Structure formats: structure tokens, C-alpha cells
Image (cartoon, rainbow, N blue to C red; front, side, top):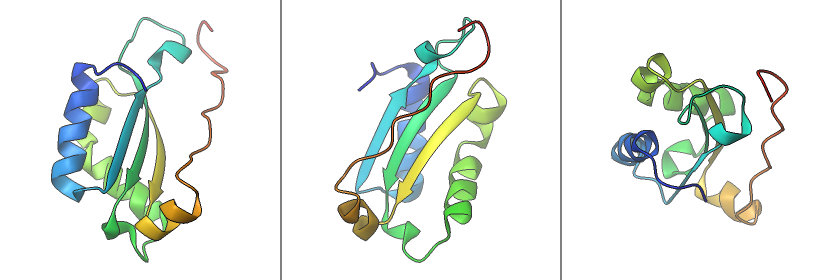
Amino acid sequence: MSEVTPMANLIRIKVSESLNPAELIIENESHKHGGPATESHFKLTVVATQFDGIAAVKRHQRLYAILADELKTGVHALALHLYSPSEWQLSQSSVPQSPSCLGGSK
């Protein structure tokens, strides 16, 4: 897991307060992308009962709303892996790897 940065900590606080997730994994993937930003790309894995019976697009919209300010002020990309507890169990607690960066100076 990535080191805890100020932005990662803020994301953790906001998501935790909004969703009270059973599992929350935040990975700073900024180092995999071009440019000088060190807190611009994050991978979030969130397991929450609020996702039961909710379509994937609605889950993503919920996270984008929770992190709206961060998306306006420095976070460029979020890789979201959002599960209900039963889906998390079926996934055997694993998420896909993020793809390699195809743009920027990488």
C-alpha cells in the first residue's frame, strides 16, 4: 500500500464519514503517471453496505459527489473499485491492477 499523504488522508476521512465502509483501501498511484503531481491519481477500494442493490454507475456517482472538492483541486483520476460486502466476498477480496499510464511524460 502507498504511503499516507495529506490527500489520501483527506480522502480516507471523507469516505469513512460518508459511507462507514467495512473496507477502505486507498492507493496513491501518482508515481505511475507523468508530471510533477504527487497526489493526483488514486485507486480506491471501498466495501460498503450502502452499495447493496445499487448499480455501478450510481456507486461511482456517489464517490464523485463525496470527493467533488478534491476532484476540483488536484485529484486528476480515481480508479474506483466499489463493492457490497457480498460482492467483496465473491471477489475473494481482490481488485484488478491499474493499467499502465499511456500519456504524459511516462
